Image (cartoon, rainbow over all chains, first blue to last red):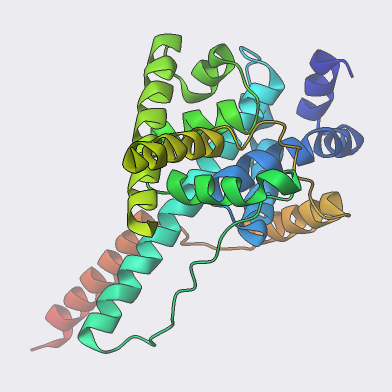
Length: 190
Length: 80
């Protein structure tokens, strides 16, 4: 697919071009979001929002980066919005329960099993996904983009709008923090 | 010695967990994703096109201020 031609057609409002775009990138966008939000319905919802935003803002796309990079940027941003909304909801629920006006819903913290992970790695990956939730946002994004989306450090630096050195540092700190979290996890379970 | 064995095992397990995303396959959306995107797009476009004279807060404040001033003026002129 010629990317420049596709962008041009999208800017002209060509519906078929939009269909081609969705079909070409739907799995990539969904996969990226799912790795961050770790919930299939929320990931599907956020992926839809990504394409709606692309449709509405395609005219502002200057073509400085690849179309896929732009999609990764929007996908990461939507996934993080989703996570922030969840945190806010959780805090409001906690306060409501504290003052006695909330409906005490038991939060079920179930393991997330990614559909694309091989069976022999499923358990280990579920532990890793849980540990990732404890990382700061930027470290979590850098780690998932590199390890789960298979992006290069260079690509991640463009998506996250930081230097390659910063990505290397984020990745190093993410691994160190994950080791600490996992070590504590093992200490608690021994 | 037993402790060091377990520590070594833990380190191995931790490294295994850290590498557990190796070979991950792309997760795929459910079929007819495009149809759902189009439905959402239509819904959002319809909502945007709905006639809303005072959509922005600044307009709401302006209209309320005008009503308040008109009310005050009417009060002043009729209160004799």
